[in-house]
Length: 148
Image (cartoon, rainbow, N blue to C red; front, side, top):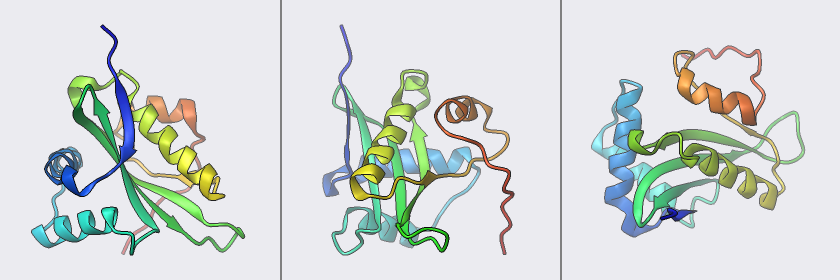
């Protein structure tokens, strides 16, 4: 029986699923955030007062299995804004089924609809499984990230 995948905007009623998915994402990167960050991030993702930030949820047969966060921002080398795809995660048991690709495609579609065709993201060098997908749907750049 074919599975039904829906990629849709994050809703207020998705908070428990979103938290479970984002927590797993943070744990993958051996990171964590405070309760205050959980609350403020979720609030921004669903708020009309923050149109520069958003999220999509991947729902497979009625179950939340993935998420993506994005941030729209100005860029000094372009007239139009650009989209930063900040967080992307799919539950391990559904990987290899096109969830990540579908979430990225939805961000690409959002960017195109918004007139902001440039979408970029970063990943850690060791994330070889995800990089196999990224290498097929985007171009790796020579930039190295520095951070204070």
